[in-house]
Image 1 (cartoon, rainbow, N blue to C red):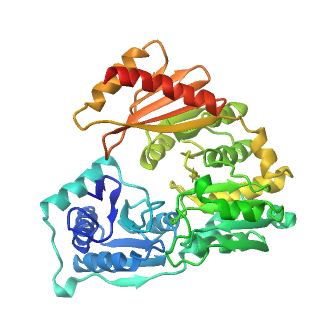
Image 2: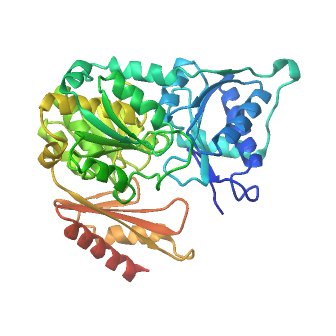
Length: 458
């Protein structure tokens, strides 16, 4: 079964049987449930946009016509980025948004990511309401004279970029004076539309555009991990570029490549950008429990605090709002900068980092070397379906009861300058175990210590 229904949206592989895969029937069903939810909130407008996946146009048309049939006006941004749709929803005074993207998943996948009227991912309660509507099938479609209207707006990437350039911590003049040479890998999706525009708007004239044709044919696995980025790293090893930027298909995850062609690491995207932001504006920061503790040390450097949230963008945003955090995000390369909007945004991450790079007069490698050096080991344990994962986690907390713990999402156990985060998957019978220490060997030893206890429990 490759149809996954969650509070944040619907994702699956294209084709196959209804109910098991993301078929046209499933797309219409969940688009209708979202439309019904929007109407119950006294709105009749939805913003949609898509990444460059081959199935995107088909999915987009099904969604648009379903919503129009419900009497809802559709503003279609066409090929665009996830953060651009998030920005457009409140600007259009819409009741919500649908982003047609499966993010870093392979070409066979697509998804409907659902946004509220603020352009943010749905709360658990709202997401559950939409799933309930879908299962009940109690949709109300409009009569012919009350059908919704369809319009297109291809200007929002430019609007998004203009908003970024207007930010107080983005210094276009400083960037332009450095004459940076930049390489980008946009995995043949909508980053190929947005990143070159952004860089030119920031005054960057030399841009090596790799895989920037938004045709949906991903040249490599689209998740921005080092094993997938050999082409841009090899390109940069010649020393001709100051920095490389890599994004996923919907441009909400960002990774850096240094001037030597070395992958900086997704965990350090937020750490490096936060270092700049906190140096200019004091405030607390937020990341999820599975993200690097290096962010804690960056916050402490400026006498600020780092708060932790459950895994998931909606949880990070909720925590950021509760403490009025100045910046936040996740260790997968997601930057959330509230002065712009509450969503992961690679474009604002690039603008802030280039400003930082310009003002420090240091190289990317030097900035990374000055950060707290930590290493995360990411593992999972597969379990039989009969095992009660909640009971395993409960026994694990008892086993380590003398250690500080956080229980908001599974359990995170702290061992001096090391930690392990153990949580169950929402979609399969596995336990995910992330551990961090000052060397990779030590991080892996923390994992093995936890695994040994779990093996004994089960």
